Length: 307
Figure 1: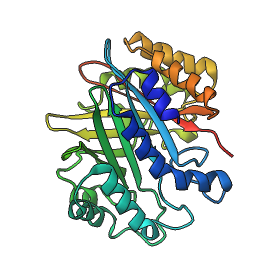
Figure 2: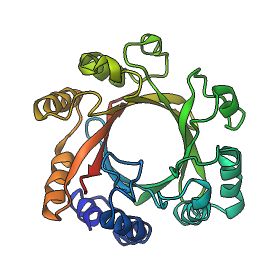
Figure 3: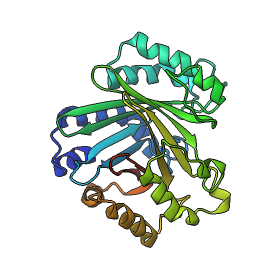
Figure 4: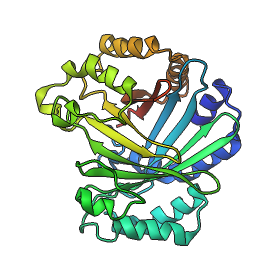
């Protein structure tokens, strides 16, 4: 499995057997369905409709990478409500949280979802050196106004734009932090009034590459993530590479050059690319997140090419 090869090649001190077994158990059914009928079993998680995303986070100078994945366990032929039992079962397995804790989150965020809402609850797991494991539950929120969402969150987002997704991060013991994802108009009023929490490294990348974004794509090609941790609030930007016109090799190399100039070691990206070719799973970088306060960080999201 690709995950096993990546964890080994990056020499991450983690429980590889647990990591691989968990992913295989959650991914087997949706992956088989998708490969058998890509158009009929098309996930909203990735550009190709594949129900799996692998990402690598790079920290500042000398920092060790971490590896994450997200799985869409739903049957996309049915809506969110019809997949509720599958979501709850997988969330309990991934987070280790009691059923009543997760049930409350699902009720707060999804009980009034409009009929026919897409099945787009996602489950994520991340692994970092020292056998650190983090699980994430991603819940859709696009039908809520900012005020309606603020009433459901531990504290207000402080942003006037609606959130499309809410994420809750858990360690093996408890809730660590939570985060919201908002569309970020490139070149619009929100862009000019970035606010004190937006990472300076994200703003540097934005300023350098925003001119590549076509006018018709400026509203829906970037996410602003606001993360509420135990010590502070911080924001990062998520750039969809196609919308930012960074798919073409020369443009993507320019992005890598910019991030490498900040002090990020990009070698793990070459490792993932080489291993994906070896196992016969074509991947492309569909999304790049840039953040960091005391030092830069960047996460590269690899999406399978299927169909």
